Each structure stands twice: as structure tokens, then as C-alpha cells.
Amino acid sequence: MISKGKKERAKQEINASSMADIAFLLLIFFLVTTTIASEKGITVVLPPHPDDAPETDVQINERNVFNILLNSKDMLLIENELGEIHMIKNMVKEFISNNGRNPKLSDSPKDAIISIKTDRGTSYEKYIAVQDEVRRAYNELRAAFLQMSLEDYLKLDEKNPEEKELLKKAKEAFPLQISDADASAPKKK
Amino acid sequence: MSKFKKKSKTSQEIPTSALPDIIFMLLFFFMVTTVLREATILVENKLPSASQLQKLEQKSLVANLYLGKPRETDRFGSEPRIQVNDVLIELNKIEQWVLQEKDKLPEVDRDKLTISLRIDKECKMGIVNDVKLQLRKAKALKVNYASVQKAS
Image (cartoon, rainbow over all chains, first blue to last red; front, side):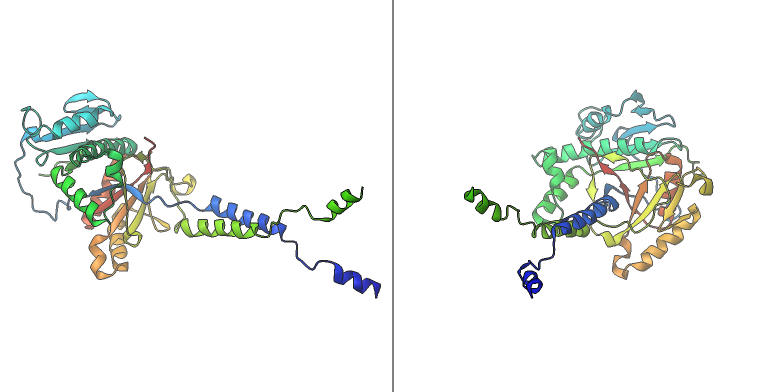
């Protein structure tokens, strides 16, 4: 009888303090094993396959093409001059926003074409860096066109109809026209 | 002395019963927000970094193509290989794969298929251009070069 009475007085709780530890272990497990999928990147639309598209001879004025060449040693040739990657942005900006003033640069942003030529040996990292710099030049011009900072421009969301309208306007004013070709590819007859 | 005895009787413990709940909430948050990778990647996949990135909106319309040096060089060689889903494929199979991916989508969305190119930064443009030519052949023209946000 005495022992029974003792039992009743003792607390019947389960010790739950280790529960936190177990949950922590699970948490750490998930933290380590999962990777937040980075569904971000540079979006491009490829031209149709040469066999599908009828060859059309479009005459493009030489002044409207901004040439960037990357060779197999990752050396840059910008408008026929050796250059560094950080020079691209300002040169591209000057080229696009020329509006016919300098006869060597583009007629208008709508005519301007950026041509990026690569070699089979060019590293992909360098190619992306160049693509990124060209895009930065365009984005800065678009941001300036909308009278906002680059950060604000990049935050614009296509889902919001008002912001989509702004983006559309900026893209119309400065359409991104990149032609990238494989310089080492055999020329079509 | 009697005062001391009284104090010692009251429990000095902090109630920790709510702690597991808090941790569980954290756990669920991470479980929901993180996405388990569907495919085991057989190739090296260090993405290049860039600053002007665009987000891919609809995940169901995205198909991943991996390109890089195989991890198991003794089995697959050391040249960059193409991986889709769980297998390494040859260049000439890309077209077929794109058609398969398009078949998975409802008919109205077939043209909206975006190919996310997850290319290792060590790769050379030669193979990248080969892949791009195949994609053009397969009429999968919307392409995304997956990259990591660069701290600017």
C-alpha cells in the first residue's frame, strides 16, 4: 500500500526535452541534403535551325553591328581591338545609345545588334560573363529610360500588370538583339 | 535556513515543451521550401555566376539538361557528356529527348517548353554550340543558361 501511494504522487509526464534534439537532427539532415533549386539564369531564344529557316539576305549596315570575338584562349576582341571584359559594358552602352551621332556607331537602339562570336575552345564561363556584361549594359540603359536604378529595374515583376507595361516599354526602346555564332563552324555554301 | 528550503522546492526549470514545436515548424518550413533534386547528377556541375539573371517562372515547363565532365571518369571518360533525367546521352539523342519532354506537356503548352542548360563552367563552347544546334534542330528554341547570382 505504501508503494502504491508513492507511485500516484510521482509525475506521469514523459520527458520531452530530448524531443527538441531529435527535431534538430531532422532539421540539420534536411538542411544538408536539400539544395535550394536555383531556377535562375540567362534566358535566350535561339534562332531556328538553318535547315528550317529559308536563307534570307538581310543587308545590315556595318555600323549597326558591335563585334565581340572570343578566341580559344579566352582573349577578347571588341570592335577589332584587344580588350578586357569590364570594358564591354561602357562600350556597348555608348554603341547602343549613339542614335546616329557618331558615324562609326549604331543608327538607333532598334537597329543595334551585338554579335558575339566564339571559338570551339572558348570557355563557357567566359562566354556567360560576356553575355552578362552585354545584358547589364542593356539593363542599365533600360533602367535609365524608365528613370529608376538598376536594382529597381531588376526587381520589376512580370506578374504585376503595371510593371509588365513598364518592362514592355523599356524592351521596346532598347530591344536586346544578340547574334551569337560559332566562329569556327564551317561556313554554309 | 527555512527560507532556503522553501525556495529549493519550487522548480527552477524553463518549460521546454514548446521547443520541439518551434523546431518542427522550422523543419516543415525547410521541407516545404527546398526541392529535392529529381535526378542524380552524373556530371560535374558547377554553374557559372552572372548578375543579370531572370527567374524561370513555371517549373513544369522547364526541362533540365546537364553538361559537364563525368564524375566517374573511369566509367564514362573525361570528356564532357550530356545528361538528361538520369542517363548520359549522345548528341544525336537530344532531339528525341526534346520530343519526349514535349509529349509530357499538355498540347497548349508544348511551344512554351524551356530547356534549362545546366552547364559546368569548365566546359568549352564547342560542345555547348553542338548542343545548341541540336536544340535548334529539335525546335526547342527557348533556352536558359542556368547561373548563380553573383554578388555585385
